[in-house]
Amino acid sequence: MRWLRCEGVPRFDDAHRFLGYTGCNIDITESKVAEERRDLLINELNHRVKNTLATVQSIASQTLRNACTMEEARSALRRVCSPCPGLTTCSPGRTGRAPT
Image (cartoon, rainbow, N blue to C red):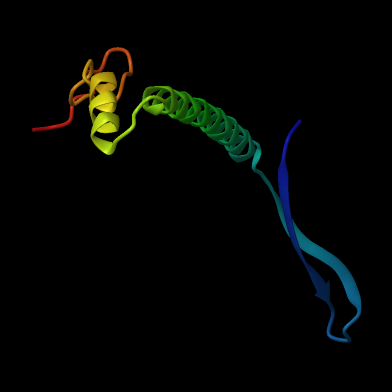
């Protein structure tokens, strides 16, 4: 399947009688394929972000379940986060450490 953008303008003679159209067709298939791929990747990214946020929310909820004070809550969250101090991303092959 190919995508075409069609543009045309009507032509008239001096007596204002319609003669037809003058125009062109431009193949925009590559642009449409790129848009579809971009949309697919954005949807996948949105899905992964939602899953990650749900996981974070669940961990925080379970961590804070037994905290009676703000200090206990802070301490519990520090314990959960301490395995990765300064870590900003967990992508394979990247350190993800924030610049110092």
